Length: 217
Image (tube, rainbow, N blue to C red; front, side, top):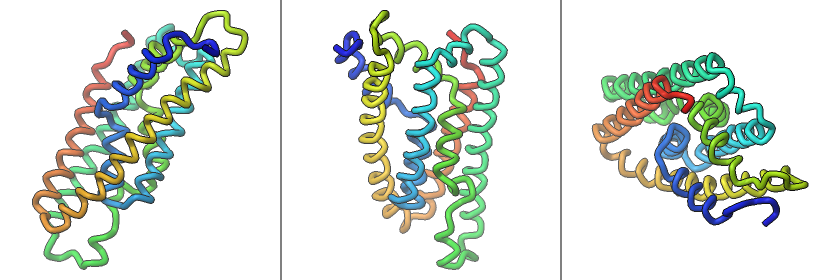
């Protein structure tokens, strides 16, 4: 069908992979919870852009250079790991700083978003692009569903990419609105909010460690 092999297998695989927690989804959830629906969708747009770039690189064969040149993979891997770790540490520091100074924070100042959640579009795009595991996913999974020798492979990649973005949009929308619900619960429970934010920061640090120990295979 339009140069795509095992379309429904691909759809099931995409759904399963999208549902796995990752730095992109956790970041969108955090932005939606702390900054609202509009900012959450700005972060989601950054994810869409990052994924689109990775899909284009995979379709054109550029991303396969990671397998052919391991030093390039190492550079990207450690850059991504360092960035995720930096984001995680700053989230944890911000959470505990706000907790220690909770009695001194004015109501208006309390609404100011943490620095690590500002510019959500740009930060989400960077998190997506500096994720070597995501690139390897598109190299190993995305391209194998395009029929070799099909006359219009660009059409096949466009359809496969649209499937990824469609299910990603559904999932991220659920996280954004779910985050707003959690934010309402956290407003009355500062200790719970601090613990949840700290857990998010720890997840980012964990993602960074996981990426730092990832291999091309």
